[in-house]
Image (cartoon, rainbow, N blue to C red):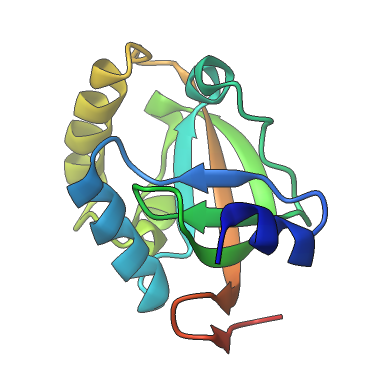
Length: 143
């Protein structure tokens, strides 16, 4: 399946890919597929730098692998604007990648620094989501 085919199934969806490397992308997709990741975040400036529309609650977007092949249709349940230094433990656990807030801060500081977007108070968009469809497995999630 091509991204355009997935977007045709979910009109108004945006295609995006997790992470900043093929390895990180694959790791995050695996966490989402396993149900271990139900929250994600990125700097507002990173969306703008990539030319991506900001996430919106209720919209279904398409997560792709590193090569752009659609993997998952995800419904945004909630989108919150939180500064980096305002992140809480309760929002770290459902991200699935980090054992605690300190590890999240170290990991995201490195990630945002690589993207040229880090500042202690950089605004983040934090998204709660659910899997609607797994294109690779042909199964569906919460939709």
